Length: 271
Ligand SMILES: N=CN[C@@H](CCC(=O)O)C(=O)O
Image (cartoon, rainbow, N blue to C red; front, side, top):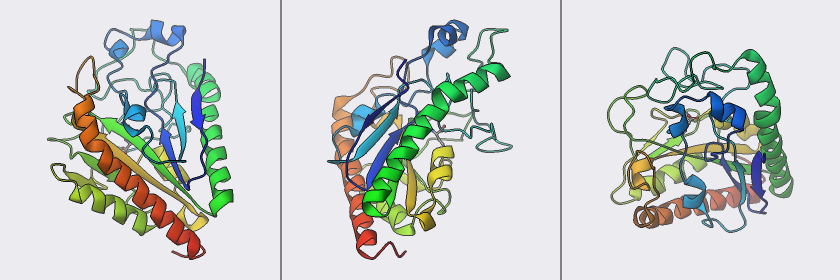
């Protein structure tokens, strides 16, 4: 089974897609219950939504599903939000808190170790290599982690999620200018709502790689799926009309991030 797909580019911006994959080995699929088999927590179609938006950008996309192992969780198993409802390294439940495994077929410690080796670490080895390659070209790299989620999930958050949820680990994962331009474009996008470091401050990818002092700037974009899906329910169909309205704003965000990267590069990466 392929674990990831890479498209190499020379832009300072790298797009990562840890949750768009829908591949599951047969032995994992066999252990999922009917609810798990809906794969409801997929970041549906997100790689299509971003396709071709920034010329010469590198993309790294996990092709395995997050129910195999979650590429946006700490491999040590630490919770993303200790004390709050969230999902883990190999999730036990979906985002609604409902079990996804058949009784007695829940993943074991041995499964976790095997899937860390076969999936999680292979995806991150590839992503790290791309970050280092791009950083070698420009002296810095901007990692933009692409996500989407249903806008109503009472188990995870109250009310309705804004459309653009920008996460910078509360300002720690990138130079402020990257967060600022992202928030500015999202804030001016007519008909859309946005927030910075609201319910989604950035997952393990953003927190782990975002080291602005070392020239690695990470920012996460969590889009409400209502912005580009026909409905936030099975079959989670892509809505081309909604997507075509949204894509210019995403393109503007990526282009502004790239401009800031080139400005920082010209200044010798002084923040
Ligand atoms: N669609 C996915 N969402 C991310 C959010 C990470 C965060 O809490 O910021 C996830 O679960 O990994």
